[in-house]
Image (cartoon, rainbow, N blue to C red; front, side, top):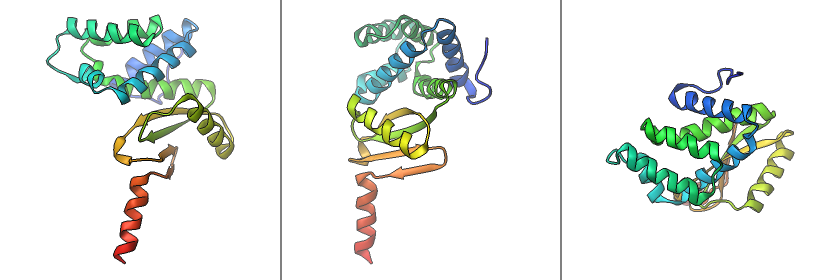
Amino acid sequence: METSGGIVAGLSGRYATALFDLAKEGKTLDAVSGSLATLSSALGESPDLRTLITSPRLDRASAAKGIAGVAASLGLDKLTSDFLGVLAANRRLSALPQIIRDFNALAARYRGESTATVISAHPLDDDQRAALKTKLRARLGRDVALDLRVDKDILGGLIVRTGSQMIDSSLRTKLAALSTAMKG
């Protein structure tokens, strides 16, 4: 079994590597990647889901039941659903956002892609994601995997980070620059 080669570390890295290796062995890498993208989007949109994965008050059985219901309602693949059950049983659901990030890094490296972290004020639809991937591919000269995050505080626009490069076209940054310019 081939592992991550040191690109992920810590608890989230170990779980992400395990899921990645199982997905690769089972030839379900695309299905798992799609399920994790759906789950990541749901985490960005649903305060209730974020509470489910972070609440210390939920016992293992309740967390497992809740995450199984989420997996079913989102139509996640079997491996991802089973993996979420393991996280719930081990009280590791709170590490889910980092696990998704680490899994995406492993999958991107396996596919020969770069990873771009994209922060938007609202979830991006399929057309917006495709257009962004096309623009980034043209700019970087290689395929790009998107690590999508939602941060309503940026108000609008996007913040894109790939490697050491950052493109900040967020409305919050533009307003801050305008405010500084007006102060003289």
